[in-house]
Length: 264
Image (cartoon, rainbow, N blue to C red; front, side, top):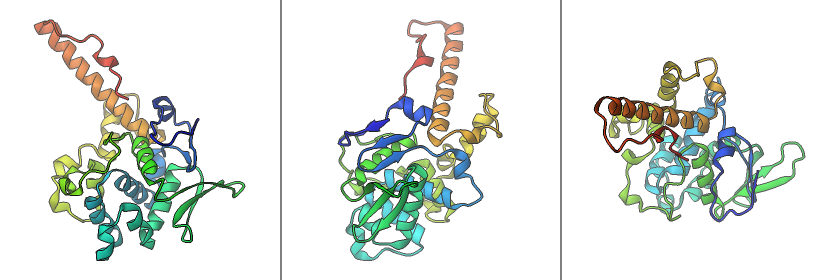
């Protein structure tokens, strides 16, 4: 599928569910990575995934703390007033991590070009330039990555929230979990809230829930497919509990089609 109107991107649910590559004009071909790619022997893919999520979903203030955790030192004071894209491009460690992240979520070969201050996407077979990620297309990237991770666009207005209104506790649970792995900011989060919805726990629960997946097959799912199936399973559990309550106590507000509710 090809998306040409990049002013407001909404990736089709069916394509995300089937993991069909989605060509986005001016950038590249997006795809959600499979779990077995994230859990490969090389931990770089996992780190890249965490960084991609942090870039796409965190506020500017939170991202500064995350960036400092990745590079292991404070950012220069002049960068702390910059946007996320400028922070990344001004640090070689963060640039390299984002290149790895882009390689996870796009089928093209990605390199950073200092002369253009942009990440260039090449056709891996012909070396033709397909597109680029720069300050102008950065918001599009954030939107695409969020949807590939089954997070979606949280801010429908398209405006970045005031960073002073958000702290680390408001980060997605997976990002908080990652920061704990780096032993950074662990005292600022509650383990109970940060470990419930991380990939490891969801994989374990889906395999134990007689959902049709097991530890031999579940890693063939993509990130989007896993969270989609977890959401559908949770909704089915809620529907089953509602049906049991109705069968015992009765009532007039029972929703016979609760299990069919569209969550995309």
